[in-house]
Image (cartoon, rainbow, N blue to C red; front, side, top):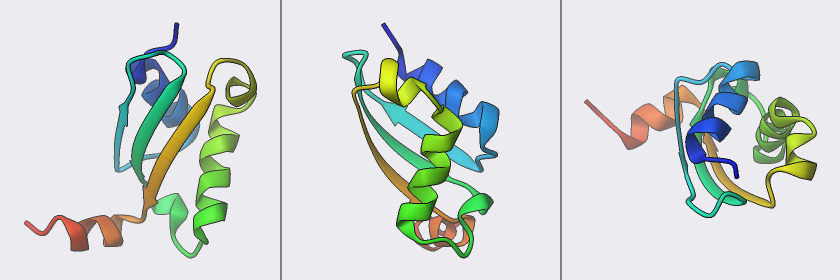
Length: 82
């Protein structure tokens, strides 16, 4: 069974993240917040496609559902001021 920590590792192996938090405790359904400069200038769909590309075939085999919120570092900073 896949853990949230393992899923975070799978994503960060192929996508540089400023921040990532994955929640999920049933091994197949997960929620993620992902902040990456790779999302700059991309639509939300393109951002999600980058995450799916980072996961590769794991989306077909190990992960049944992944709900994600993708943000640029600038948008994240707006939401979380110092």
